[in-house]
Length: 186
Image 1 (cartoon, rainbow, N blue to C red):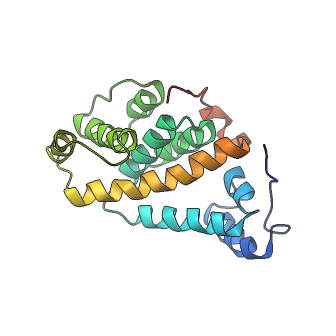
Image 2: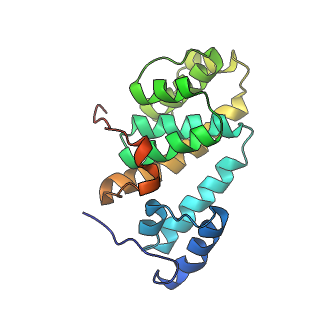
């Protein structure tokens, strides 16, 4: 199943201003995921709203990208793993951490590994995170409020990962260097 790749010029009426704003914010680049989502303006608007809200959390940009990349790997989304690998590099997340997440290896930095582990636990348990996992998370300087903020990132990725897999979002040429073979382990 695939969906059309729209532009700001030919997208449905409700999506045009959204695509124009993204294109302006991203220096002219318009990701294929957004171009596809534009076919249903409410989907694109919801995704952009979640992205904006997650960007306003107490996590650093690198930590935000870690959550988004972790969720994308966990959900097996080839498109989003490439996009957030690139985003993580731009946010200056350690290259070793990026590769560890992509490869399913442990991250050397204990704090970053705690954030990753908590994100994975929240996804795997569908929110029924064991108290031990929450204690491990908070023992690395994170708060219970931040545990709730992780859910915004997970929600954002539930939408985009599922969408990209369902509709086969093609990888943008700009993201080819970050291509990921994927997994269907889960």
